[in-house]
Image (cartoon, rainbow, N blue to C red; front, side, top):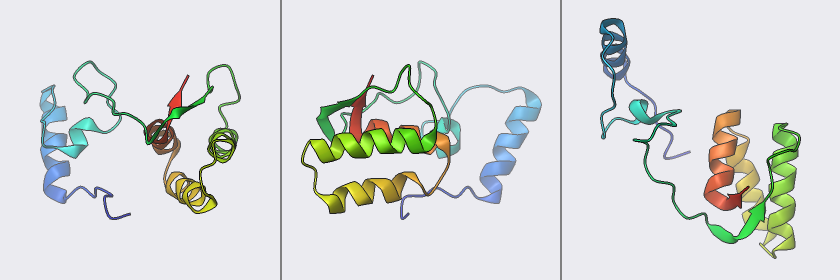
Length: 111
């Protein structure tokens, strides 16, 4: 959890002020500006840790545990060691659903 961003009071006040004034846009150096962003200005996706592993998520149960199980199973079938699979599982269950999806996309190719 060493790269968990915790906004300061100043960060929150800054963004609250911009929201109240109707100022739009993002600041490249501000993690709050990029949280949950899906616009064209979002950072380009990176290559997953395991680009040779593809997991089909579309058209299936969107339950977090179902997604976790599918990815964990795909990692196991690809021969990824148990310690690394467990590290993946630990990483995705510490936050929310969006974090789960982001982490899955950082680890494997998602269709």
